[in-house]
Length: 618
Image (tube, rainbow, N blue to C red; front, side):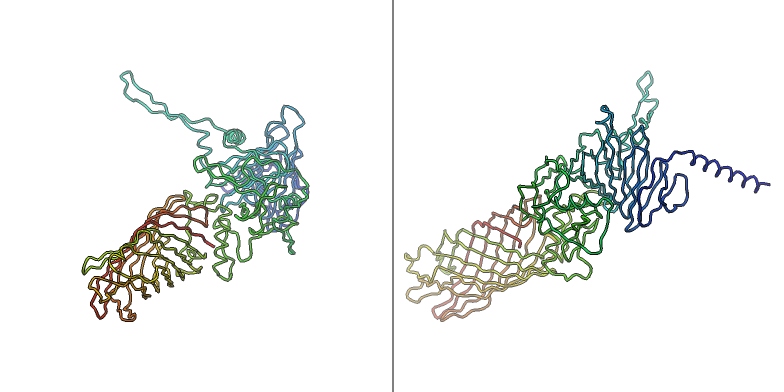
């Protein structure tokens, strides 16, 4: 008996549910489709295939498979196209109220009909919501991308304008904030603390509040704006590559091709656009204000439709006066028929990691350097950030630290003192200078070869008064060795050098008369480079080198026991990602013994002064 009653209740419940669903008026219908599309009707447990001429009530979710597409028409005559691998929920829609679409993943293109009532033209009549953005539409043609992997929402407007604002998981709580009321007795003691719930908001009301925020941006025709968890607010709208814009505009049904027709940004000089592009308000070269959160990438870049990421033109891109955008030649290509973006050869674009090496790619320094450059173009750390918390500036892996050739040019000006310990004989050059070129060779591991060349000029004073003689004032040093990346901020290095320097030998004429011979010494140098302090563009560099010289016989002189050290402290300023300048000080000491038939000399050399340094990565 109990089984019969339970079965009857179940059948009755299902009957009521089906009756309720049947009573819901359809708000959208299928106009065109290809591939595999499924629908999940409100209250249904399983999804079912979508068929031509299907009609959908509110709260229906639609999912497209790979290489699939569907076009649906709403009761207010607005149209929505879904691209491959996409999912939406039609939250609300009617002829007399604002429609709401939730984009859970993928790409959609929407064409909203303008209101014919004058008083309604300035009101949003259509909303699109993702996990990170809210968009309000008054009558326009636009494309929206949402990637759940990096939580990136990208908006590209073709006609009209779209309001866009960032939202996050706490937006709902902020809008429906509760109040606390403290109830006290007559003697002012706390008797009760009441929490008064905030005003309950419907989805439309909440979206209206979000889009009334001062951080909302208005995206005009031909421009792109995007947002993510890492950004404080939506990016300022910028123009994209005109030729990609044209291709995306024409590809209304998200068609894909097997045979590619690749183009680059160079074609932007003659775009022959089919639509008007609004004047850009943000600086065309881009901007970033860490305090306010204002961010605009360089104009003229490409949009990747799968990740939602914007790839800005490279640093060397030139500005085209006709279109008002930078011409991207090295930041990838796109298909001229579909608008799909393609990364440079050897790289692929990952939603979370940015540009990574293609599987089985030949790992070369130039490819790793290209990867680094490309990740700067998408501002990966600023735009995507750390998906589990705060934005982090990701350092290169140790194997990528030396992926670029680095040239350093330095000029050291100061004083060099030579002291003879035996009799306190002292000569000095207060105008000594040294010019050094150091080449750090690109590498794909933690070791980097280093090559150096130095020219110095030293002329000692007080020679004539002592009767001393000095060989040539010009000195040369060549060096070669290896640098090892111990950490991202500390490098160890070792190199052999052939170092010309002056060494004092007794002449035998008088006990305190010396001849300063220019002798080439072979030296082993061991040292460490370290970033002592790093803040934004400024870095305080420290360099310490220990030196040991090998025994050297030169004519009647023998130089032994050569040892010393050099210390440098150099504040550096980064001009850009590849160039920096520094101004610091150096000090070095060296001791040696010089023997000949007339005796032994203990010599002390003391250098100190300032160093100007310029570094460039190739």
